[in-house]
Image 1 (cartoon, rainbow, N blue to C red):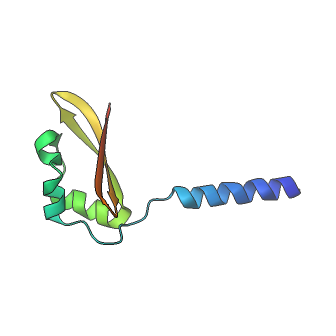
Image 2 (cartoon, rainbow, N blue to C red):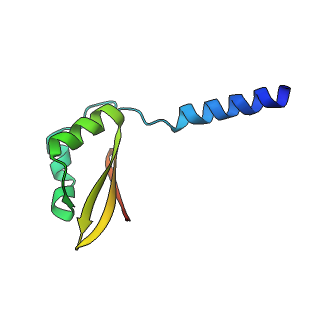
Amino acid sequence: MRIFQSLTMVLLVSLLLACSLPPDKPVTRKELGQSGIYRTYKIEESPEEVLNALNMEGEVVLRGEYRDRPVYIKVLATSSGLEITSFDR
């Protein structure tokens, strides 16, 4: 019984730590524009939709294209700025 409680507590703590949080200061349209994401990738979502998701969740995963290849684009709002990574679909 004690082992079950310990495992449950570890699982609960790990789930809470894995949740994304909104950024300390809201991401602005200027910061999003300076990141160059809309010049590098073809993205269907508007900048307003991306900003809304970033400011509410702290991260967003977008579908886009890079040199005619379909990719997923992960944008993470951190205290030091936006971190952008892409993965093949």
